[in-house]
Image 1 (cartoon, one colour):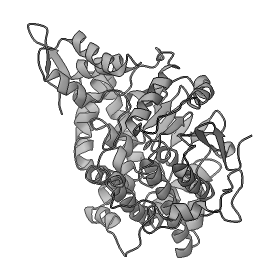
Image 2 (image 1 turned 120 degrees about the horizontal axis):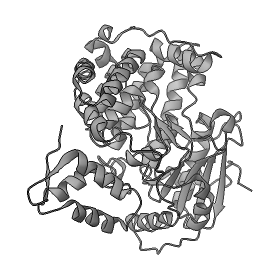
Image 3 (image 1 turned 90 degrees about the horizontal axis):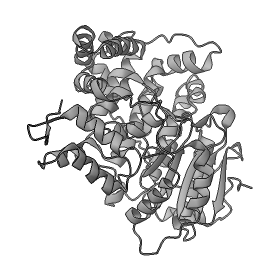
Image 4 (image 1 turned 180 degrees about the vertical axis):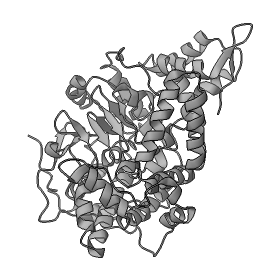
Length: 483
């Protein structure tokens, strides 16, 4: 039976507090649901099960108050080697934060808005803790993985998608911004995919979350329980570093590879990916719209023309304030470190709790029994001024989220993710091709050997080469890509 979420060791808070420079460890409150998170131990594996299937496992403060102390406890334990987080039921890993509760709290005035911002502080503490966790942390992104669920998973070094994965950052549809560290992970996706996903709230299903780099691995959902049992058998040497342990885990996951689905082609690829990079490279939404309108009229590929038309419609339906804020957020976030990201997002979240679009968007999309069309204020993109956007980013007062790490340590304020466990990135393929004297087969061979022949490598490298390279007269690849 899974352990209930109550922390049994009263010394945990005292031990964990030594790790913190300023923050106190969250504690459960009397009104918290005792069963909304379940914990279990299987040899060296520790599991976290989000247990609100009727709410698609959406994250609330009660859940965060349980998970944070338990992660800190396991971090100190010599018996805990691997952490796995998943969701109860077949539909969702975690469909997001419980924004409906926040929107309703905001209607009570300043005290309600302060309560909502306090929730974001708690959530971002948890997300930063995951992003800097010193032991292997694995996220089973099985089912709907959106918003707050992305924060619980995307900063993990190992993220497993299944055929049931449905990824999105849907915040611009509800008058919010892509938070939970979206300022960090979205601009670090390849090309302009992050900007595209942030502004449009586009969804990626199944294996496409793997191809896009959202997930690092892909297996069938029916294998997850067996994988957990197999991971519990692993025993690491005391001297093994994090990278070595992650490589062992990756090799274990490979034992459950059954190939990739042939009926799900790579979505963000080829001419569409070229169009995304062309259109979403701009720093203003007006320039992006102009670029989309050009694609709509002049693109040779019919699919790209249809995509441009649909994307223009999509952007016109999103909160104008959210879209403009998200674009600046992604642009600025390329320069933020992982700790600064959550501090800045905390202030942004507070500003959005005061903005009418959040209540309107959440009410229309999530609270009303029959979804309605939100009323945005301002109503259109041209009515949102540069001053409006800058005001959202202005840090006012000294209040900040107290992160649970020593920010004097480099590993807690990194500027790039320290571990890359997914498919080869485009810049890695470019580096190999630019060495010269490489035919396509040799490039495939190089990456397949380096990865141990893992699934998805050939497909990913082939797409990158097809989109960015041509062969010279001797058959050697020449890199011609770029925006």
